[in-house]
Image 1: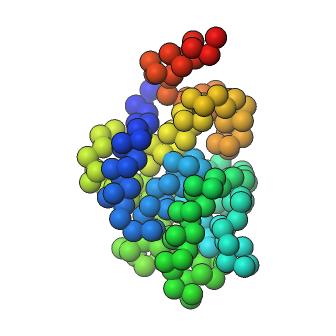
Image 2 (image 1 turned 120 degrees about the horizontal axis):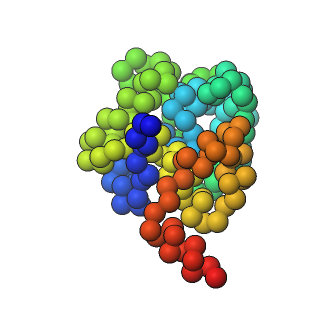
Length: 188
């Protein structure tokens, strides 16, 4: 079995955010940590995926089949915290870049939308620059699932939030550690 991506600690997230020093970079990173987005989903987002006609961040991202892994549409709820990162990023864009059909994230290398592989490589460079060993583009997604599980969110809710068709797939994302186990027994 392949080694899973590292679940990020609060310190890892602070460190990576310090390295991700632009609104675009912070937003892309936090969409994985706070919404559990995959690299392909980050790559396929458009301005219209996250911003309504009035220029406000939406409460929910609806991804079409062609924007996801497995060709299954899904909805992603945007937390208040993540909405702030999105708003900061959208505010940083020039008006001509805010047309709904335009890609949300533009690669500086190609000056066009990111490919899924481009997003994977972007995360690899970010975590390497931050000195975070074992992290990958999937680390934010695993962190999202683990943090919610630690807070008592049901695996059935996690399955839906992650866009999985099987609970066994979802359970593989949750990192169970000594802290999690201690918190569980202290619930009694």
